[in-house]
Image 1 (spheres, rainbow, N blue to C red):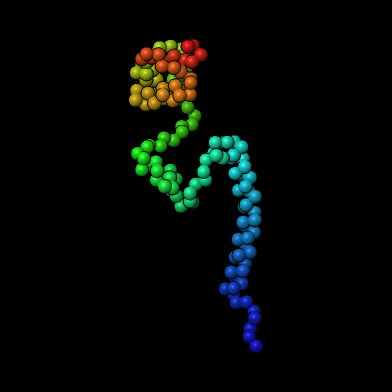
Image 2: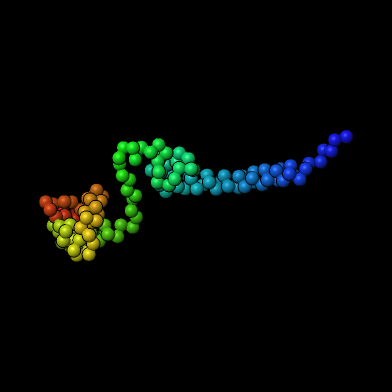
Length: 138
């Protein structure tokens, strides 16, 4: 008669499979809840396609189209303290130039030009000839 007792390796495999199933069953609802919360908090992210693969390095696109088309991606800055400082300064001194604002804020003008562009795109300031004015004062 053949011995039908499972070997130690088979026993280990069975226990491992059972544990993986337990973990998967415990994690899946949490992942679903996280995804739902993310989609509620950021509706634009829900419309965006999911990442191509977990192996894709962060910041790299799956097909490399951003690099192939020669576009640079700029991460969206958070906090916006410089932008807020710039808007506050423009509110206090309507018509101030970026060069003068850079002196007052003690930052490089080339950096502040980018901040000014962002403030204009967010409709917080408007460009008036060489200077800027706050939208509320315009």
